[in-house]
Length: 208
Length: 234
Image (cartoon, rainbow over all chains, first blue to last red; front, side):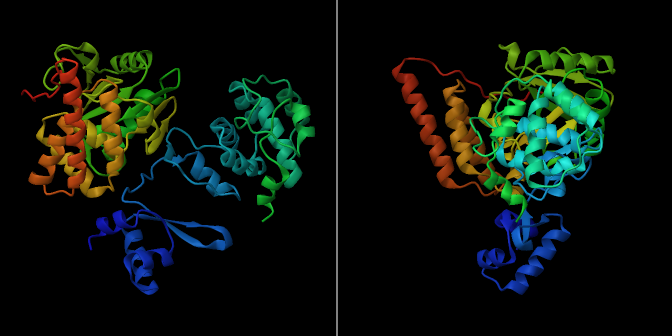
C-alpha cells in the first residue's frame, strides 16, 4: 500500500490496537506502519489519560514553521488536553501564556477555558496580562478565572495592584461561556460580577 | 513563482506587521495547497475577503509596497459583473489576487468558514485556509488545465468528504449559483475519466439529480439559467 493511501485510510486519532483492527494486521506490524508514517511526517504522537499513546494521523503534513497557536500551546502547557479543531500557527512572535489565556477566554468554549486555568502558573508578567485583558474587555473574566483556579491548584500570586486594576475592568458580556453558570463558586462570581462556567466537579479534572 | 517560505515572508513582512487593524482572509487555490504541502510553488497568492474595507486596506498596503494593480482583468472572470473579478496586484515575483466574497462562480459563506483547516497568524493578518473540499469545488468552475491537475492532486492526497461536496452544492444553488451543480458534475466526471482519480459514481449521480431538479424548477418558473461556465482566454 502506498504511504499516502495508508495515511488517508488511517486518518484521525488512532492507537496501535485500532490500527491493527482497521488494517486487520497484528500489533507488531501496526507499530511498523506507525514508524513508517512518522518517518514520512504523517503522524503526531499524543498522550491520553493513563499515558495511553495515541497517534494523530493525517494526510496533511502540518507546517512546522512559526510558533504553536492556542490549542497546541494549551496541550503543551496544561494538564487538561483539548481536541485541536484546526492547525493554528503564529509567525510574528513567540506566544506567551498571558496572551494565550486571553485568547482562550475569547473562544467562549468550556473545555478551552478550563484547560487555560493551568496557564495562570506560567504567568510571568501580570501587568501584560492585565493590559491585554483590558484591551479585549475581559479583565474581570480573567480575574474571576484566576480566583477559580486558586480554589483547585496552587497558582502564582497575582499582584494586588493588578487585581484592583482588573476589578475595575469593563466587560461586554457577563458570561464566560454562553448561558453557563456555576452553583459552587458563587462567592467568586459576586466579587467579579461575572458568571463562572465551572462547578467544583469540573475543576476536579485537575486533581486526576 | 514563490514557495511556501516566500509566501509566509510576504504575509509577515509586507502585510501582517504593517496592517493597523486585525484583518481576516481566506487563502484558496495554490496558496492554501502550499500550506497543506500539496504544492511546492505558486504564481499568484489568492485571498478572499469577507469585508470590502479589509480588501481595500490590503490593496492599499500592497500598493505602498510596490505592487501595481492590473487593470485589464479578463480571461476566466465574468465580464458583466465587476464584483466577481478579483483585484490583481502585481509585484516583481508574484501577484496577489484579492477576491471579495465570491470566487469565479462560488460564493463564500458561513459554513465554508466553519470548515477551514488551518489558521495562520501574521501579526494583524490572519490567514485561514479553505478546506480541500472547498478548493476542489472552486476549481470546478474554471476551464483551466492546471486547475484540473491541482484538483486531481487534491483527490489523490486527501480524504475528500463527498457529503460536504453534495451539501455545499445544494447551498450554492440556494444562494444563487444555479449552474454550479452541472459545472461540478462535468468537472468531476472529467477528472474520473481523464485523470483516473477516485470520484465515487454515486456522487456524480447525486450532482446530476440536483442539477436536473434545478433545471426543472427554473423551467416551471420560466426563468432562464445564467451560464457561468468560463473559458480561459489566453
